[in-house]
Length: 286
Image (cartoon, rainbow, N blue to C red; front, side):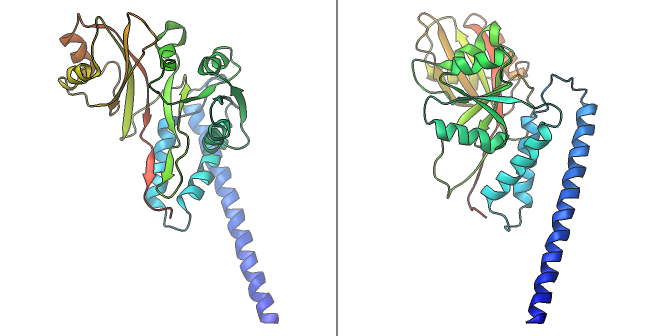
């Protein structure tokens, strides 16, 4: 009995030591984050949110995971750590579109930006964008593009909102065993970067009626691989499309420039409206 108590005490002491080590390492991580923020010359009003870097961190951790932590657990822990680091420089508020399936949208937001974050409920995408415009929120969670009459993404083509763009797609990590969850885009004014596995989104306005198939062909002719195309049916006499392209493609990409040069009379407008690191779907939960 005495030996059993001694063994238990020893194990508890080891756990205490490990907990202290974890706390020390987290403190060290946050100090390094502060140094990174200084090196990036962020002003007091700038967000430290870096969706591309965070995507690469999660991909690296998923590869390093030895199976002790389930994928959902690993993702939950590190998203909280990452978000805590983001808020060291500036706390931020997230406006969340909650008209449809509000609990799932809020859960998506909290899984990504942390359970202690500040969240505003919005009943429309335009309200979500308005909250950012009025500095009541710094980031927005909005639905994916859909073939509906609303076509909210057209707002990103206006000069009024051209500072905003899509920067991430949620959830970023899922497993095949998890039930299907609501998906969403993150919109913000922060910059995005290449992660090695990306998709890019453009709004393209054509001078005359053009089918989706024809637009895909025109883009493929200059080497652009189209993942998906959406139309904006509520805009009469305006032939506006949202196009998702494989890869990290900027507005100055040589393929985009080639597309514009090849069809100068067909293209009325082309604008980059965002992009995201392709989410990870893990086959096994461990």
